[in-house]
Image (cartoon, rainbow, N blue to C red; front, side, top):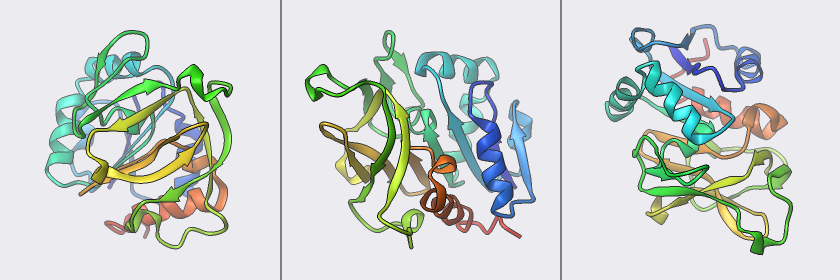
Length: 207
């Protein structure tokens, strides 16, 4: 069963639509801990502010069950804010604690890049190493971004994808069963659908 975390602020409709397009039939929208039972994969799509998102996960009592499931080896894909949650803390509108599953932090693009923030639109992504998540990407590897804050992994071995927006930043991460992408695969056309399909193949959610 594919669990899609619904904490009231994610861009669920387009993500769910993309998953249905890929043939997913066994999907549960998770709003409370019991709904995580039986999950073989987890996707956490997110938009909005880091602190508000973590607070909502806490109010729904999802943080500890989510961390336990991931630590037990269930594949996790965080999208946009769902990737940022993986890290220790963010300085968006104050300092807020994340899930702490990856060392590092989240911070705002600095004025020194000389570009408009938020970073919005298509940008080329480049792999730092092989991964099943990014196998057989079509075209030139462009993805769609909407964000003002970016992840700074403390361990460069967790870095999977980079992009350039006045500076090189983490566009994707992976450690063991933990995956995250800063861009929106559900809005990234063929390349994004390939990434979602690759994630689903990790436990053959597509039937």
